[in-house]
Amino acid sequence: QVQLVESGGGLVQAGDSLRLSCVLSGRTFTEYAMGWFRQAPEKEREFVAALTWSGGNKYYADSGKGRFTIFRDNSRNTVWLQMNSLKPEDTAVYYCAASVQRFASDVLMRSEGYNYWGRGTQVTVSS
Image (cartoon, rainbow, N blue to C red; front, side, top):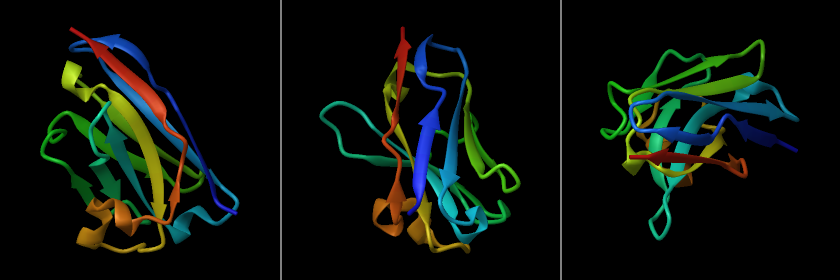
């Protein structure tokens, strides 16, 4: 049984940084590509960033390019999302997800490409 646990969310001011973490347990971490999604109130869940099992291929939504960085440490079963220059519109619940599609694929930018989800961590950016 795969479990994903996110942490690192919080309340910050515009321009601040946050680093979200997600730990996978229950299966071998390298079996999965990993992604981050977010959902703001009354909006649909949207893609934020993803990377393949090795971290060799990375994908970013336009909203986060140049500000967000996704990276992983396979020895620690952990994926991070470093978020810089945060904006109020980044306010959302951020979800970590794991996909059995380990290799590069555009499906990693879609929620239906993922098999397991965490419960989310709240990020609130005040103006």
